[in-house]
Length: 69
View 1: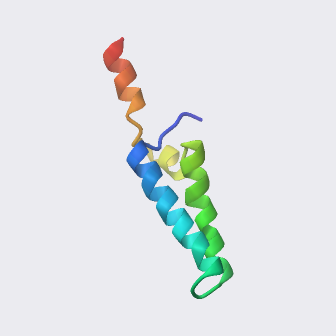
View 2 (view 1 turned 180 degrees about the vertical axis):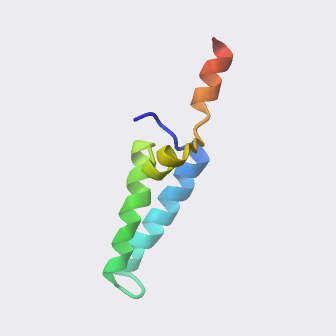
């Protein structure tokens, strides 16, 4: 599993994930808010399975390594 989630993408995922999880405690208080665990988890590990399947990579560390070699 190579990282394919960049820093801006991680920030967005964390905000969205925490926002969805907060719906469990505040607002409509439904269990659907727990779906926010998915973007939060992908932000923490830095790897997104759909990105891997589609060949998407928002992580810039791969490009920086190529330029330094």
